[in-house]
Amino acid sequence: MPERPTPGSPAPERLSAGETWRALYRYFRPHRWVVALGALCTLIGAATGLAQPLAAKALVDRLGSDDSIAGIILLLTALVVLGTAIESVGAYVLERTAESVVLAARRTLIGRLLRLRLPEVERTQPGDLMSRITSDTTLLRAVTTQSVVSAVAGGLTFVATIVMMGLMDAVLLGVTLGVIVLIGGVVALVMPKIARATERAQEAVGTISTALERAFGAFRTLKASGAEERETAAVQAAAREAWRHGVRSAKWQAAAWSSVGFAVQVSFLAVLGIGGARVASGAISVSTLVAFLLFLFYLIDPVSRLVEGVSQYQVGSAAIARIVRAERLETEDVAGPVPHAGPHTGRPTGRQGPAAVAFEDVTFRYRDALPYVHHGVSFAIPGPGMTAFVGPSGAGKTTVFGLLERFYDATGGRVLVDGRDVREWPLAELRSVIGYVEQDAPVLAGTLRENLLFGAPGASDAEIRDVLVRARLDTLVDRLPDGLETLVGHRGSQLSGGERQRVAIARALLRKPRLLLLDEATSQLDAVNELALRDVVAEVSREVTVLVVAHRLSTVTLADRIVVMDAGRVRASGTHEELVAGDPLYGELAATQFLATPA
Image (cartoon, rainbow, N blue to C red; front, side):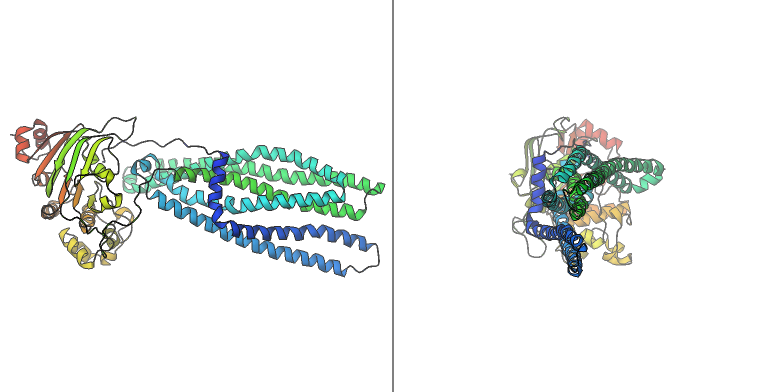
């Protein structure tokens, strides 16, 4: 296992209303003119709706006379058809724009999350990061278009309807507004509850993703441990938590919507009673009361739009907060091509030959609250040749590789490659000269060819074949049904542990690195393949600087130099024979691990 702690997740940070609106406008801004077109179509459709009660009033007035009503019937029909058509166009424009907003947000998030610094990834659950790209961006689509348009169109239509109702009868308007204001206060109290419930539901969805990722990431261990029921219970508990908060959000949204319907019904009854009395007294005509009641029913749509817009904003603001928090995670600057890259392989064509490595009084800890892993580590490796790092578990051996790759930055001291502090190297250039084989030798889902080309996408078929022979993978490829195009399964599940290690080594060799880091890279190989790969590494080390973390005799004794680490310090260095004779800890390690008999 890597010699590092498992940090906890950070506490969620809430966004202010201003920060939420600025983030919302950032997504909305590139599409503002298209959204404006959709809003215009919505307003035109609303205007045709506003004309319908006036046409109905004229129709009622003509029913008491001998005038023809055919023209008014045609006008009403035209208004309904025209309004429906224009609103349909506006709805399509907004839906299409909403999908464009989601695409842009996902592209931005994907590009950013895959460039996160390793400590940020270790502090955040991977399932939660995935839910930011999937479910949170889906919620974003509503708030950036529908919410804005619904609120604007609903607000303008509401004002226009109120003005028309006021022109007809101020008394009935006062009755209507009194009821609406009363219910509106209730709705305003409900909206923040929708936002809180939605954000918690989204966090629970992230927990589900994390739990599933954990289970599928160790599926064989899960089954071998008989842990199906326990893991099922854990995932179901997260699902129940998401359900609980989702139901709570639905409850408050239902309360908001039912309040709108209740307000309209109460207003209708009040207007019908008071309006009937005013008709009886001769204050208004029957046609005016009919038109006013139609306006009242028409008021349902703009009020519903307003409530919909505000409720969608509350739902979307929770998603925006989670997306913004993901965007604030610290990333690495790996943009741009590798300087002096070759035209075919993508590998640098500048300085050649083995890289020199040095640590100068390096101290390091993973976080401020944690103890130091390195306490003044110093060594110099000129290259080429092989250097083995040995020591007890927790000595800081794997951390040496993490600092060289700049997965982490040293807390103190300097890490040098070719005499240059790694913090002064452009990251892309630094990593282009390094081949790295991790302890668990990960293999990605996809074909065998895709895995080999992962670090050197421009490598030729001849280079691939050469590496396959050197890594003893050629016989495997020959017997696979589809050769290099064979799918290796999730995390290389179709390959054995030794085959995965050989694929990882071949992948690193294909980069033609100047510095090769091998972290227990042959631990799962049988004796024959280990011996063969040992010879390959020995051959590579004649031209490349090779650093290995290893315990086996065949690897350690092959090294040109050995660095013994203990409790975050360099205890001794030398050849195998020198250290067996001169360092008690190394002698003890050699005895207990059957490296040699201590002198």
